[in-house]
Structures are given as structure tokens and as C-alpha cells.
Image (cartoon, rainbow, N blue to C red; front, side):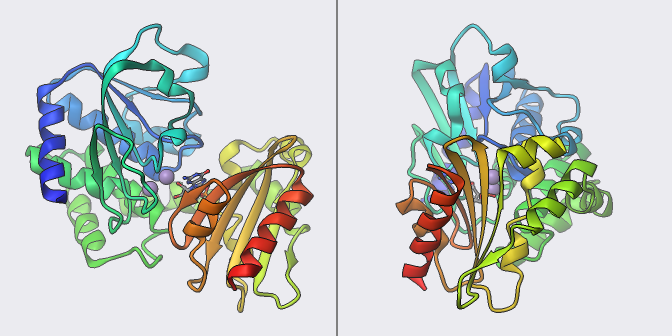
Length: 323
Ligand code: 5GP
Ligand code: MN
Ligand code: MN
């Protein structure tokens, strides 16, 4: 069961050393917070560790790491392999990206995650789909290990909860989430500052992108599906970073009567990243899975190979079939 998995994960951390910690491609608030939190826990245990990701850490999350750098795999990958790996917030092995080339063949891999589509890719798996965020599981791991709470660790746990619950508003905001958040506030997490930094503040490029994206707003005839799309050209023209599209998908979904909101983002010619958000009737996690992606019941994603128009047609059709 879950408790036993947690105990085994605690033993994995206590007994090993020289850990490699990785989260997912295009890391979000929970991914970075989980990476930072594992770093602080390993540091408290007196372990050595390397934090790494294929994609860079969005600027607004950098402060959560308290000076522990997450190595940019593309720029300065270590030239050796690791025997002890911890993957956080990754629904499947592919979400780790190219960082897996740093895993030794005989590596032990601890998979800590909350996605219902997680396939248990680790040698050790602590997967709890009822957790609102991976940091909620890491909170329980820290308690199991008896780690002393510090402000930086509490800040990471709080930030992951804050971002994966959309500011304690989504349906995953359980009493347990609020209880953990309460404890983290008592241990020094600054709730208002984090909400301002992580949820409210937009970069200039992000605002310009919003302006462009809104001009693409489209709906199905019955107005139950709404979507936005952004071309590579627009992203480059406004100087948008990868994370600047975050939150855009909520806009069509927030329109009264819309069941599924979609964002189509042309990552590169022929590669379209799709974000899916459901008002509740459609399980977008299983829908995304049929398109090669995954995620949660109300928030999921996938990548479509094709033009922007092809991706729109294909995904909108697939959503229509489920309505
Ligand atoms: P987003 O739309 O914000 O990128 O992702 C929404 C949710 O779906 C997140 O929980 C994310 O982890 C998951 N997700 C997004 N893209 C993919 C994908 O390509 N594969 C899988 N398995 N999950 C994804
Ligand atoms: Mn995530
Ligand atoms: Mn998460």
C-alpha cells in the first residue's frame, strides 16, 4: 500500500547517496517545487545530490530553490551516470526527456507522482492520484523521515500546492491540502508573496501574447468547446518564453457553457503541444491518453505531429465524440 511505499522511499533516501533529481519537460510550479523540496530534504539528510532538467527553470520559480541550482541538461550535462535517481511529478518515463541518458543501467529509480495516468515506471514508486500535487506526497515523505521544517522547505511545499490547485480553487483542494498549507504557513511560507509572484504577476511578453492569442478565440457550433492557438511566429515575435502560455487555456474554458477548453501551441513546425481543460463532464486525461499524452481528469496534455490546423481539427473532433 501507499504507507509501505512511503516507508520504502524514506529508506531509499536514507540508505543511498549521490542522487540525481529530475522532474518533467516544461517544468511547472509543482515540478520545480518538488525538485527543490527533495533537494532540501537530501541536504538535511547529509546527502550529495544533483538537480537537473532538460528544460530551463522559469524565472518566477527560481527563487524557490534557495540557491540550489537545477542544472540545464542542454547546457552542462554531467559527463557521468547516476545509480540513484529520483523523478518527481512525472506521469511517465518519457516526461523525463533526455535526462534519462544520465541514468546508469543498474540504476534504482524512485518515482514520486500524483498523476492518475502514472504507469509505475520506477523501481520504487510512490504514486498517490488523490494528492493535489507531488509536493503533498513529499510533505508526507519529509514527515516519515522526521525532517525538521525550515522556511525554504515549507515554501517549496506551499508553492507546489498553490500552483497545482490554481490558488486553492480547483476541485483537488481537499481538507488535507488546506491542512498541509496551514502547517507550511506556520513554518514560514509567505502565502501572499507567493500568490503574487507565482499566480498574479505577468511578464510583458506574456501580456502581449495574451493579446495575440485572444484574437484566435474560436468555438464549436454548440459553443461547448472553446480554443486558442498560438503560432511559432507569434511566440517569437512577442519574445515569449515556454512558460508564457501557461494559464491561456483557462480562458476559453472559463466561458459559461464551455465543457472543454483547449490551447494549441506550435512548439516547432509540425509539433503542436495541446493543453486540455475540462469543466467536469469530459475526462480529458483519458482523452489525452488516446492521443499519446496524459494528465488529470480535468487538466491534461499531449503533443500532435502535424500543422496547427491539423491539430485543431483532430483534437476538436476527438472532444466532440466524448460530449
Ligand atoms: P499542461 O496542459 O498544463 O501542459 O498539462 C496539464 C497536465 O497534463 C499536467 O498535469 C501535465 O503533467 C499533463 N501533461 C501535459 N502534457 C502531457 C504529455 O504530453 N504527456 C503526459 N503523460 N502528460 C501530460
Ligand atoms: Mn507538473
Ligand atoms: Mn503536479
